[in-house]
Structures are given as structure tokens and as C-alpha cells.
Image 1 (cartoon, rainbow, N blue to C red):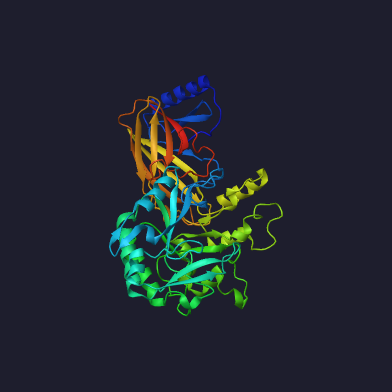
Image 2: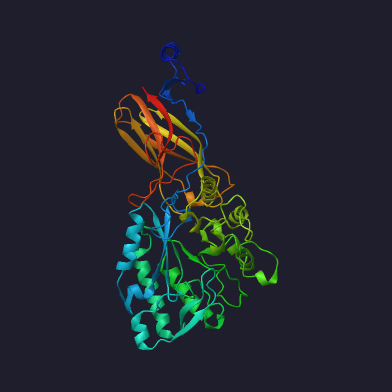
Length: 486
């Protein structure tokens, strides 16, 4: 049986260990006792003959810039506020030069620039964007694809601006969209620089609407072609749609049973269900109408979005915003993982920053190790780790979970635990997995046990646990405890 953790003087601990060894010799049975010696601030458990040593790491909130979650500034902005994702728009015309010809340099610059800051990317391609030139590839314009030039008044809080809406039904444009998505997936699906892709391409800002000229938006047939192309091209990198749509949706092709995530780009403004007919486009209202599969989509696919621009100036003030919806409730009900946000790119007071940081932390997953144990059998150390998710959503990526043993002389042993983090849902029972470390090359002495989830992006932020001893002994790793191997 393991002794309780606490401070024990070295001489007293040594005498206890000697008595235990003597008892073991007299009885000729395996020792099942553990004696603790305090080294620094962490106790060291002396493991003999297979007795389990249990560690119970204390809780501490996870950081606001944990990977693949939190607030998302535009690329290169918001550097004073912690974040792990950055967003960028790209014109299709900037990369597509012919029916099957592509210049990926603009996308490469975006991805590399964001990765150089240790972040992953969220991006969207567009065909029309008020105030910007048309995003329709030049070869299509030259071939006669029609563009409607008009003044878009749906640009609040900015002033109306010139927009160019293409003829989405033109078969040449439709073929180009399918070819582009196929090429994009072939080159970038699973790229560690990318966190999420929003489907884009259709509608103003790639947001799948042409309001107030809804009659110009892509037909359901064209929408289905785009969704089919993304489904065929992307199997690793999550792709998110702007609007949930059920079978009876009059504007959008049904997508409730497709495996896309969603992004609510009017977050905390038009998110919660109000019950009013005029608000039937609000995110949660549309989500419920899309059906049970869409309502539960957050369990298997990420939910993102953008905090509505009207809320940026006031959201983190003590008084909050006079308009809009309750931010915390929106997070809970949508299970949102990330949100585009420019409110944290402006100067914040200390109190505003604290509120914003807490809000960013509330998004997505929060993984806490609640218990770990180690059992020695010969020179094999069996390690068991129990993790719970205190957040509102899973961690959707399939990153490995590893236990690292670091000896006092510098030797290391590592094992990957068979966790499937994307199935670790909030509120579900804690998940326990076991791995075995080979300590054959370790000499006797102290061994520090660490737990880590490395980011596949070189230089990217590792996933950090919601535990006090995260980063204690090695950046990016949670210290589980220390043991002494005889």
C-alpha cells in the first residue's frame, strides 16, 4: 500500500525503507510498500516489487492559447493576446490560373507566416468580397462568366461597398469550383499548418448568402456539388459550413447528415433561439430545424464562428454590451471551439483582458489528468493515466498522447497511450489508458514521469493539460510525479 504524499526527512525515510527491506527478506515475499522522499517540491516514490504508486495532479485552468481552440485574430494581428489560431481570406483568382492550373504561393505565404508564429491556420477562399476586386479567376472572366456589379448595403458596421456577384449557375464556374476543391484537398488535407477550413467560395465573403439579393445565390444543386467535392477531397482536415440546413430549408441544400462542422459568423448576436419568426435564421434555430444529427454534430465535428463585429467595442467591459446575447450561454449551447475575433486586437484594460482570457479559455476542450499510477514489474513500468474533459467540446484532432520517463542520469523512455481524444466528450466518464515503459537501459535512481501531447506543427504550441504541474519540468509536458527505481 502506498504511503500518503507529504514531506519526509531523508534519514527517517531511509530507516523506513531499510525496515521494509528487512521485513521482505524475513518473510521472503515481494515488497508492496512505497516510501516517499522529498526532492525539491515533488515527492519521489520508491517503487519495489510491483506496488502501485498513485499520483493525483491538482487542477489549474488550461491556457487561453491551447492549440486548435480559442479566439482567432486575422493573420498577423492580435499578437498581444494569447491565441493558437489565425485567420486569412484568400481570393480564388489569386491561386487558380486555369481549369487545372494553380499557383499556391499566396496560400503558402499565409500558412508559413502563421506557422512561424507557432499557430495553425483557419482560412476561407472567396469569389466575392465587398470593396475588393472579384475573386473569380481571370480565365473565367475572359471566357465570359457573368459578373453583376452592385452596391452591397449589407456591410454593417462598415459603409456600403461595391460587390461583384458571379453567375453561380455557369457550368464553367461550377467545374472550376470542383476542380479547385479537389486540388486543394490533394495538396493540403492533413497539413499540420492548417487547423480548420471554412467551405467559403459561395456568396458574399464566402458566407453562403447574397443578401439582400438572395435570388443571385447559388442553387441547391451548385451547393451540393461544392459539398460533395469537399467530402471527396478532405478526410483529415475539418471543413466547416456557414449554415445548418434541414430537408425543408428553402435556401440551402440539406446538410444535417453530412459530416461537416458549422461556423456561426454572428456569434453572440444571432446565436440563441429567440422563438421569433423573423429570427429563424439564427444559428441554434437553424441547427434545430436541420435535425437531430445536426444538433449533435459538435460531438464529432468542430463548431467555429466569428464574434459579431458590433460587439467588439464593448464585449469585455464590466457593463457588457447593450445589444447582443449572453456570451457564456452561447458557448455552452453551441459547444463552440474557436471564434474569429478582433475585439482582443485593440488595447484592453487589465480587467477586460482577464474577462476576454476567461472567455477564450471557455471555448472547446479542457483536458485534465485526474489520476495516474505506475507499477514496476522487473524493468517494465506500467503507467495508467486517467483524463477527463472539463470543456464544452472534444479535442477533434488525432494527436498522440505520450508518457515520457526521464532518468536522473538523462536517459529517456517513451510510450504512446491508446487514447482517442476525439471521443472524450465533456461530462462523460473519465477515460483511462495504460502503457508500458521499458526501463532496461535506465540505471537505478529517480525517474520523472511526464505526459505530453505534441503538436505535429513544428514549433506549434503543444496541448497543455488543466493541471498545476503542466510545464513544471519540461515545456509542453505535464509532470505526473517522480519515482525511484531500485
